[in-house]
Image (cartoon, rainbow, N blue to C red; front, top):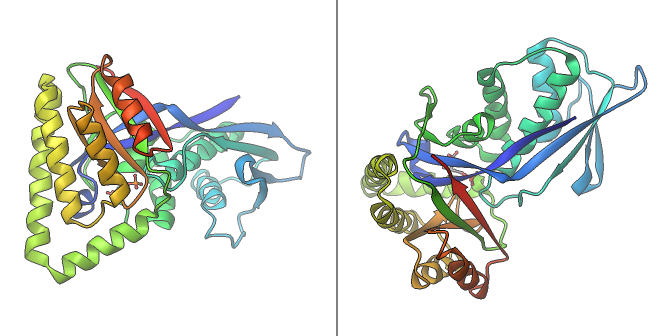
Length: 310
Ligand code: PMV
């Protein structure tokens, strides 16, 4: 049996969401992390085999590998369920690019957790699973807002506000997005830390930027509910400009954003932690091939197309 969890993209509100502004994020189900359970001999214990890294990690309740997100996930699931490690090997694979704003870490953790829960014959609510993945996310992010784990665990578009109950988002019309990968890995933790430093240095200006982003997200929410794609595109461009001012864009991201707009995208912005990783462009199914070509010509290492359906 395969246990999977999707990638995600943030449509609006990254970074400001750490400071309690809202964000909008959607799952990308065509990219996923997958965990397959293989039975082991009785008494062998629990192992996680990371196929892509060609590594095998033993998991025990007493393990001190707490800096390893894979084993930490397993330990937290075992502790929550109050069980000993089952005798299985979890084979893990993923086609989500790492450290690129697509939620690869949260997806991998979610797939592992689902496999262990199944093997134990117990159940875990979505909310319990979400809080375990959130705890593990702290390893990658330092101070995660919780948006990544929420959209990935629930696999639904969300209007997310930190420390508030999940609000699922229903869009009015199908939305076509292209995700352009700069091919440059970037650690969210560093970008988030730099925004914190900027905020400490220039609290008034940065606070206003966070509020401006909050307004953009609220307007984008309305545009999504009524299906106003033109306005949604403008709001993406405005959000990108705010992220540039927060210093989390990069020449590569700006170049991909400009190229998508020149090729006719309705709007474009970086998505996720920034500095590298991915950007997104809003388009129509008819225009998508043209913009995809423009993004590849502009140096994108990959372009993925995804649809958000009503
Ligand atoms: O880089 P990603 O996609 O994992 O997203 C990080 C989003 C931030 O808002 C920058 C941080 C957070 O915890 O919400």
